[in-house]
Structures are given as structure tokens and as C-alpha cells.
Image (cartoon, rainbow, N blue to C red):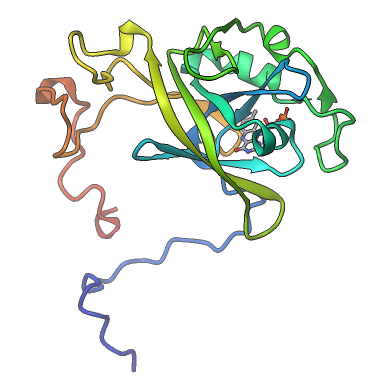
Length: 235
Ligand SMILES: Cc1cc2nc3c(=O)[nH]c(=O)nc-3n(C[C@H](O)[C@H](O)[C@H](O)COP(=O)(O)O)c2cc1C
């Protein structure tokens, strides 16, 4: 006989078990793309797309391949800019995808990866001076975070490094800022999302957190799902 479920779990109803066990080769379940600009040894600048990025207060945590030029740069020159492209800029991001600033190209890079010393030009993107750090911002990106890598350490599996970058200056396109405030307008801004190696923007807004500082009327939201539609028991 099965024991009673722990009290913190909802009581089980007669739910059909529809999940299958799979072994996906990647677990990129949809995170924003950022373009990291960092300084090379010779004083030139590197630019690399990364999707393992998330914010904890003023710190952005980044996951980087251990042998890439970006990880190499941040190990010795900690200044960087975390540039956030808009969804329409995915072709420029994809132009950067097969490129590395590392020479010679490490054997661990995927087949077809090639060295490119000027990734701004290769992507068709424009560098503009930062205020507090040496690497340039990407002018075309609506959000640009100047930052400093305060901690760079190996991940548990050994192939990556985990970077904790503390943001010191934020630049935003006025078109995504609520006028007269310091708030990003979530209806005007969409990240570029990397979803199992495909690019997406955000769909229509569904609702907001009770903590939002930019509440909107319900008319601005997408139609609410019918009551219970999200409960697998009512599928
Ligand atoms: C959309 C996208 C997301 C990526 N996400 C990551 C990532 O999170 N971490 C990483 O190390 N590489 C990621 N890559 C691969 C790097 O961009 C690639 O390894 C590149 O060669 C790094 O450049 P670098 O060697 O000059 O630093 C991503 C590539 C693309 C196109």
C-alpha cells in the first residue's frame, strides 16, 4: 500500500500520467541572451553571446565555457558589459554564434567554430564607450549593464566557469523606460530568449507580481485561461 502523501503536497486525484522520461542533450529551457563585451590581452575587445545569465539583486551570474575567450578575459581583466539585445536582433547574435576570440581555436569548441578578432564588425554591431569600465557597450542593445566580475570559479563538472558580475551602471533606451522613473516598462521591453537553441521574444503579458512597481489595468493583459485550465487534472 502506498503511504499517504506528505501534507505539503496536494492530495493526488486520478491524474493520468502523461509524462515520458527523456534524455535531452541540452537543458536550455529558455533564458535571455546577453552579449558580453570583455577586454582582450592586447587591448582590443571581444563580444560573445551567452544565455546562461540571471540576476540576483545587483549581481548577474554567468555560466561560461572554460576555454572560451570571454572566460579567459574575465579571469584577468574583470571589467565587462552585459548587453541585452531585443528579439529583432537575433540574426546579429547568430552571426556571432560560430566565432571565438580565442586563438588558436580550442579543441573543445564545436566543429565549424573559427577565430574572429573583430566580432563587433563580424556581427554588424557598433561599440560605444562605457562610463565606468573599459569594454564598450553595444549601441544597438536597448539595455546595457556595465559590471565587474568579482568572483570567477570553476563549476562542479569542470567544463565551465561561474562568474558573479556586480553591475555598476545601467543604460537603457528611453523607449523602454517608464517616463520620469527608473523603471523598465515590461510592456515595452522584451528579452531575446534562447529556447532549446531557437530564438523567441516574449508573448503577450499574462499578469504581474504583487510586487510590481508598474501595475497595468487588466485590459492590458492577454485573455486569462479558463478556471482550472492550468490544472493537469482538467486537461
Ligand atoms: C544564443 C547563444 C547562447 C549561448 N550561450 C552560451 C552560454 O550560456 N555559455 C557559454 O559559454 N557559451 C554560450 N554560447 C556559445 C558561445 O557564444 C561560443 O562558445 C563563443 O565561441 C564564445 O566566444 P568566446 O570564445 O570569444 O568567448 C552561446 C551561443 C549562442 C549563439
